[in-house]
Length: 439
Image (cartoon, rainbow, N blue to C red; front, side, top):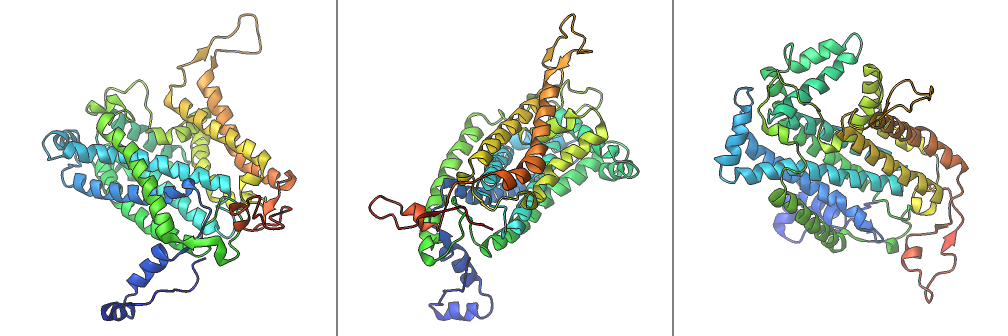
């Protein structure tokens, strides 16, 4: 918890500004002296990585918007002109395109870390919900941006995804027509998507501000999941975590640069370098890699409306997770059974991503002659998608609530300092205790 401000203005100008706009005090209390648990590991550095990537995406996006033409007759060529004729346009575009993938990679690591260490539990429910809002806005922004190059995959991806809204009874067709700006994906659609793609990153930045604010009320969670009990459990954010975050961000930037300079198109689809043609549909339409698990859930169900509801429900489930988890112990360090189901959940998400990347009929096992149990060929990717989707929802709605009621966790430390300072010569008495009711 942030506590009272310890900032003392040192100059006349600082005192004058502090009585009118205490921005220096805010920066000091937020970045410099903020008490942070002293046992945070490198999984906690991805918050800083995400802030950095948001800044990169906003800056490169503004530059690209200066040269992009949101018109169906010129959009594709304007992207090619950026690549060939604008000074360092290729660098700006590759930085932006691969930055989206790096942004989602970091946010997935950030979310899985929160799931493992129970950072969504009380008193951090609002913090988690704001993070889910940020993720939903990122998904929308990523989809709108994917359409802008106006290649084959961009155009037909927009047709497929926007048509899904028509599955909703009564209002579906009206919403689709409004989103298109007409009766098909055309120039008004591209203009709408460009406007929203430009606007939403600034909305994300605003929600990130709320997210940081919500973080500074209860303070950081930590690998033990135990609440901070005294000043000995914390250290100032600067220099301990500014240096640690800076080092992690540097390593992340190196990986990011490898994609930008050596394999800038590996995460995209080559067919998107073909201009959009409404009369020629690609054999297999797929979204970007970071949306593939949800795409697999969509296709897992034969009914279109049920598939759409399942896809949106997969994201909506995250919003209610703090109330689905009934365990009083936060960290899975002390929940071995929950840890096993958690790693199966990660595997299920990877399987869903694999299934989403392949056409449903890519891997078909023929019906065994003489067996009457099967009426037709087995579509393996479809069934894998169904199994993965079933486990996805079962993990949140069945396994997580039941584990909190039936699991016997390991002993939980009394304080953060106990495991940090637990050495044979200096281990304090009562370093561990039976699982307390950790809220």
